[in-house]
Amino acid sequence: MKRLSTGLPDLDLVLGGGLSPGSVIVVAGPPGAGKTILAQQICFANATPEHRAVYYTTLSEPHSKLVEHLSGFPFFDAAALGPRIEYVHLGDMLRGTGENGLRPMVDEIVRKALDDEPAVVVIDGTKMLRDFVSDHALRMAMYDLTSRITHSRTVLMLLGEYTAEEMLTGVEFTLADGIVHLSYQSREPVDRRGLRVVKMRGTGHLSGAHTVQISGEGFRVFPRVESFLTDDVPPEGGRVPSGVPGLDPLLDGGLPHADASLVLGPAGVGKTISCLNFVAEGLARGECCLYITFEDTVDQLADMAAGFGWDFEAACRTKQLMISHVPVGDLDLDVLAAVIRHRLADCSTSRVVIDSLAEMAHTARETERFPAYLRSLVGVVRNAGAALWVTSETRTFGPVDDPLAGLMYLFHNVIQIRYIEHRAEIGRALNVLKMRNSRHDNALHECRITADGVTVSDRFTEVSGMLGWSALRTHPEAEPDGPAAR
Image (cartoon, rainbow, N blue to C red; front, top):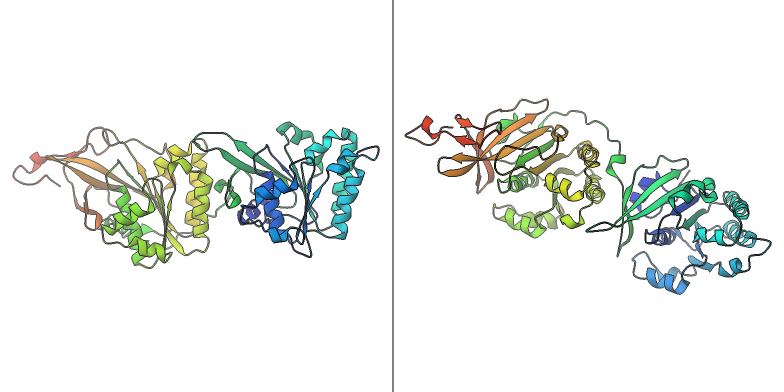
């Protein structure tokens, strides 16, 4: 059956393809959750002169105020009012409710659905109907309405401020083909809205709570990435050059295809510069790249790259490179996953950078969810055939800690950059902690930041503290008349 699109591709994805013609959908949620805006967006997206949208209101705000509140959204079209969108106030019918109960209202809505064949019919404020008739009368009226509307091609949407208890017992929910629950959670620094499909007959909808944002653009849904079941990526031959001079020989020629790589290190050690190396290599090879940053802005990263001779601004203008700066105060895991997923959708992006993961995990404040989220996000990137380069911060001094709380197994390649006491200087050292199903160098190598970015050079031979039990340092006494032993 061809489904009716909501006009929001990601919401259609969550619903399993859209809305079935002739179905009854209940949209429940507290005030401010976005019920009216969502229903209006669906109406404007689907209404045509041949198949209009009819929007019924009960005892809610006047139509003039409703239109005024909608006029600032891009989906609103004043010229559509009348020819394509019709507003009908049910107040007079409800005030005159007598022995016939809700029958006049039901007959009016069914008549319009059968005669005019609208694409969408909305009743905004369905819960208020309980104030006019008994539970028995309401049950009979709702059964009459929903059973008769099924014979049309109209999608009937019932909006109401229902509580969780009412959703378990209300007749509307028993008769509905679909139930969409919108939520609103007050939290600092940014309040959060969500959407959950409780029920959707005949579809493979995505489970879980999905993030909702209401902005000047209207109602947007960001599907929960854990709802996507990604296939295992079959191994492919060939290697992906890292772009870090001297590193690929330690990796047996480079990173395996569609692998996830993690770069660990303390602040200032060169993790972000290694990201620039990785992206610059991809751009030089004509690849499309995505860079997710939480700290550095787009301009700051472009300036940093320019200092090494890489023109990221030009790559952004040609859309070969997309830099997405997500301020930590605005970070939402589902929004971030949507940015990555949409960029990967056309299969042209082959390199993805996230800088940095520890900051992302801490700011998201979803500790219990994060392992499953990260596993799914890595799967989405690898399933698209892209290479993922992720940084994460460790402690600057003292033993190396595990900032990802045991999640390093999700990354096939783990590279560590550390500070090292090198005579009277603080130097840098790099080693490959692991590479899954691949040979790699196990030694500790000198690492520097040069005009080429992060570079890897000679191997250290006399070093203590390699396992993190003490400060990492070289032993100059090994070569008393020369530079520190390597």
